Length: 215
Picture (spheres, rainbow, N blue to C red):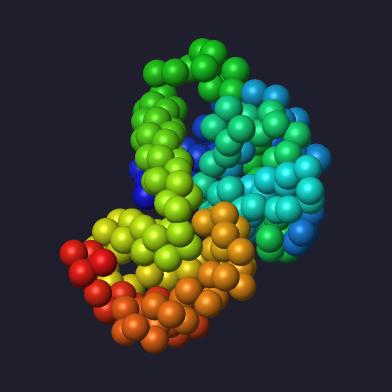
C-alpha cells in the first residue's frame, strides 16, 4: 500500500507540514487520541507507533474497525469518527500523530509545489485503497459462518500479498474483533481447519495448505 509521504523527501516533508499548518501530538499506550485532537474536519497521520480505531457498542462490546501503522491516515469522514461510538486508541508508547485541518489541504494557496501535488496524489490513492478495504471487510463479515469468514479473510490476504502465508499484524483477539466474531469460537474453528489439514498456525503466521477451489 502506498504511504502518504511516498516520493516526498525528508526536507520537503518538513516544508509540506509547515505549509499545511500541521500539529503533532504524542500518546502513550492505551490512551485515547480523539480525546486530545479536534475531531471535526481533520486528517490524522500516524507518524510513529501504532493505533487502532475502536467501536464500542451500547453494551460495552469493543470491535477493532481499523489498524493504523506508520504513515497510515484517518479522518473525520474517512473513518466515521463523528459517531460517538468510535475512538482511536494508541497501542504503543510514544505514538506520534500529525493532525492537519482538511481546509488547509483544500484551500492551500501554494498548490503549485511539487511536494504538495505528490501529497494530494498519495492521499487520493490511499482513499481509494481504504474504500476497497471497507468493501472487502463488508464482504467478510456478511458471511454466515465463522468458518466462511475466516476462509474469506485468508483468501483476501493471500491474494493481496501473493503468498500462501497470512501474517497477523496484531493478536488473535484483534483478528476476532476485526471479523466481528467470538474469540473462543474463532479459536475452535481455527483448530478444526488445522485438524482438517487446511492450515498451519505458527505464532502469528498462518500457512494456507489449500486451494480456493477446494473449499
